Image 1 (cartoon, rainbow, N blue to C red):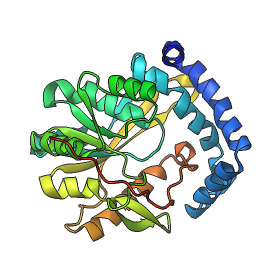
Image 2 (image 1 turned 180 degrees about the vertical axis):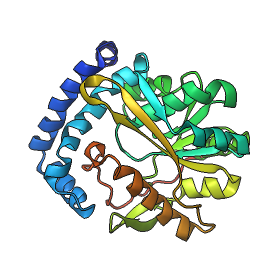
Image 3 (image 1 turned 135 degrees about the vertical axis):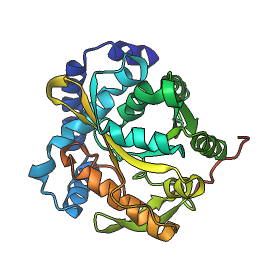
Amino acid sequence: MPIVFRFFSILPLWLLHALGFAMGWVAFLGSPTYRRRFVENAALAGYRFAQVRAAVAHAGRMVAELPRLWLGATPSYRLVGEACVEQAHAAGRGIILLTPHLGCFELTAQAVAQRWGATHGPITVLYRPARQPWLAKVMETARNRPGMQAVPTTLAGVRQMIKALRRGEAVGLLPDQVPPEGQGLWAPFFGRTAYTMTLAARLAQQTGATVLLVHAERLPWGRGYVVRLEPLPVPLADTLEAAVPQINQAMEHVIRQCPQQYLWGYARYKQPRAEALGGGAA
């Protein structure tokens, strides 16, 4: 598999996205469970299948472009909204960048690292290590790039994120993924209660860091991406019970900007698994 990954990492983006188009539709047509969840989740947000059917292919493109993003040269992209990052760095309290499972979320951290890593320190991103040893090794290597540091979902990883924020650096999170039991709160997401991580809100409340939103839209025909940055629509509340729903609302706001590239098939409303956050020294 590592050899296959390296082969795909050198293919042009247009070809990877073409392969991803096919992969997405094969998965959608071949899995009734996935297909039903996709349609139901989109309907909860008020979208008919015809309005978001492009997301079927974009789910496949997300998988197909990973070798390029992890092992190859960073694809071309254009940044929009740089001013809000500059203002946040000027405040000196660190930046928490939040992105949903929308478009090429893997690229967002790479773009921030390339643009601001040399002047403001690396961006620290949280990731869940893969269970397959070969994939875990690839992920660890690929996500530790110049200006970018990946830390695992352990107490040690969270402590590293807090230290990075207190140094005035940036961290990145995907707050629309379901956290383990005991690490979230039930909060509305597109009109239905979903178990939602509290980590993003806790980091902001503990460090006073600025919360920004970011997402990377794929351009047609493999022409690259547009990485869009923006402030949180409203200041984050002081309590977790109020802040966590605010973050879900912010994710909805971002997703509605490009619903054709959201992972509607993600099991967002599943029950959390029973798993303790791992320990370790910071």
